[in-house]
Length: 138
Image (cartoon, rainbow, N blue to C red):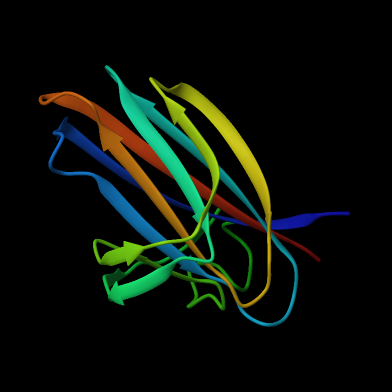
């Protein structure tokens, strides 16, 4: 079955210890989604994915970008909300890895759940990027 897919990414050429990427994803009470997460760092960094987190202070809303550029839903406001840079806490750890070299992990997402993703440099003057890919079965 063909899938719709949207992506979001963050990158920093001066990825410092104090400047972690913090992202929250909130799923709706309908439909089934999967999330692929990958982090890449020039030197050591830690990627952690949490399920059932809490948003203390909302961050900046972000836009999922459709990889299907002819898709009628491309770049539209998505029912799976995405934000970055807020204060996100708690949750059950689903995945953790250190010193990533672009490995990708994929999760089926529960409905009505907040997922917290943090990507933290373990050294100053690092370079890093975080890529999220959301998919839904049509």
